[in-house]
Length: 356
Image (tube, rainbow, N blue to C red; front, side, top):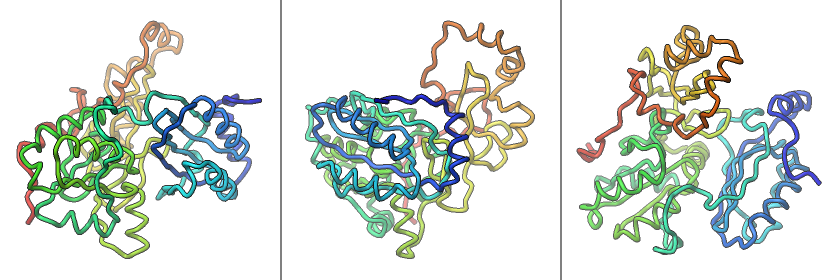
């Protein structure tokens, strides 16, 4: 009985190419009371491995958060399996805007304390008392309301390449960090403003909306299904697209195009560009934006120092890394002083957005 991956990412990529099948990338989440997450994890791995599902799935006592890909011809079988699980029956699946057969190359199903790392004590407030869910049409209408403050609940590297027109985009590295910043800066408007939130697929807003209602915000709203579902509804219903740029995604696609606008810059030369990459130095892996010209000049590295390390023999590089573990610092390009053209989002709350 296989409960873990036995193939490397490279081996899996070869098999996908040989299969010649189109794959679908999708995501879903559900808050639920799961008493035995490890048992559920093993059952899902067995069932989904048989359907050639690949992806990153987190299971906790509070629910499930899944981002995955699967062969398009297995979609109905996968949906039927979900419908056989009580708390997942009829769940909405967010189908990716842009497809890539290599979006995921391993099936990783992990048991975690929480399905989103929010750092909150859930027993201190009612997590089921959520904000009002809005469709794309309703979201556009609320966004145009001069009494609305729209807040991007994602991290700085996500909002830098794309966000809703007029949205506040906090300079944060984590979801938990944004909760306190937003609450502190908007506390004067708990009663007189509409707090309108959005994120990639909706899961972060589920918890955030309940948190802000607990903190005394009266009019709390969230985009149903996040940016992914918004794009689908905009196309199907012929609505005006209020999202500018790309939607950052946490798989090998890195982003999906929502509009034709390029709102970001290469962090090294300042030219218009909006594709993230990781520094090639294995001791760094900083996530940053690098245009093709700078990538060639810098050997896909974020600094001269990293370029020098990258040019060393492999064994020497390994010796330099010995004893140094990886960390979430790879997401902190906003703190990297050697990137001259990174977008500085600090103090963005000094003045609230005004509607024309």
